[in-house]
Image (cartoon, rainbow, N blue to C red; front, side, top):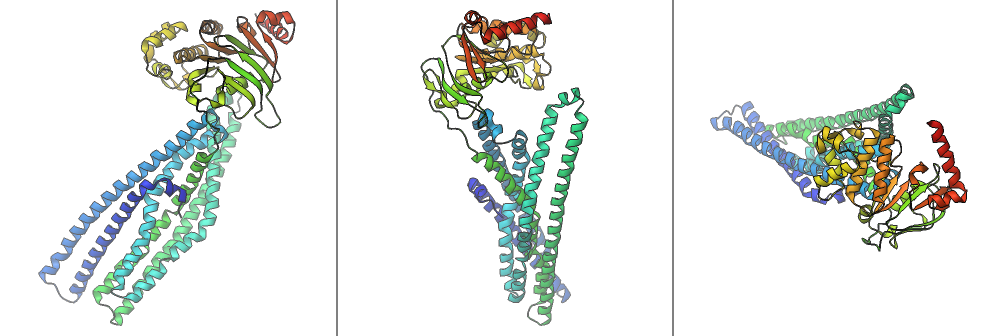
Length: 573
């Protein structure tokens, strides 16, 4: 039971597998020598031949065999470790590189929990698959043939019967293979579902507590865990039953060989030493395949894990751009239409131009297409009709690395990693410069706060839980400034923060817009009054565009939104 593609992907492991098989075969030959020496000793002892030289042959042989076996086992373990390490490193690199190529759209191809599972437990299954199962497979073919040749020199009849009984073990394995394959597919599916629920509930634990829904979701997860337990128990039962069948075949076949050897001895066809030797090695005909059978579930799990890894690897990727330059930073949307689902368009024939080194705001109610516009500009979404260009070059033609250097997007939920403040800021720079980091922190007015808490060595916990919402956004803003892009997109970057932080963020954005091309997506219209251009979106189209003053003079949709929001804010005061 081999995964052909898996073996093809790891051709470099073939020599290592061959080495492991060879060390096992050497161990087998050493055992044969020891059993033969023991057989001669017992035969001579029973026949009253106890000369001195016969007494020391056995202990010398034992010492020599133990030495050979020790060396062979050590080499085998080293080769197994090397093969396993190659597999783990290569598969995790394969998965990681694929996810990096898919970028932020990876979740369209695979759930986050499943990506984690195949990168951890899935890869671990394949580690055992290459380190144990594959070499055992070849050894289990070589060992019976070797013993057949050796025993055949003593009694071809017994050797032939033992060899003919050996295939009964793989036949029993094949008999349960189809059933086991379906069961393991169900096992992995249930395991993935449980992982999805666990990750989602863990991430949303605070929300569940707030709405007192944690008990209900706990029961739901208990049900999924119970479902997984039952599937796991069925898999274990299948394994136990298959091992029991293999034990009956293995030891039954060995018993037949022993009985035949005794009958051959009675008939005078073989000597006492040969009879003793055959009795001692009869089980060795079957034990390698019996051991292979015990790895059966590992092989099945390994194949299933490999299928999932290769399914991710083969998943479609959007065509990558190759251009690494463009003529300026002017952004142009020309008759762009896009929908996340067929027949549900989010943007409808949208056209506008954003001049370079200008301050453009995109506003509108929730769901009108503001953030979708930003995602299309970043190249994060799938195909759309129409053209989106930067400096006259279509976004889809630009190399991803160039595009990410060209544009920096700051969202309301920009991620800060656990670690130091220095680590979080340094990722925006090719060559980390602490002076520039401190300068950026001063611009966002975080310098004094940071210095009180350890400077750049200040620890940031998971999801920056030890920072306020305003502090998180200002750190994200400082990091964006250090990236020094030509175009900046601030996607609700000043939302859900305190007034002081909001005012500071808008002040920095306004200053930045004098040197860079800045796009501000905001639900709060008071923040866009100084923009050079305001694009007002409604139901997926650009309803109005112009400066704040001109839009107010039109007495249209923008004015209606602005006045309604202003009245609401005055009422709140």
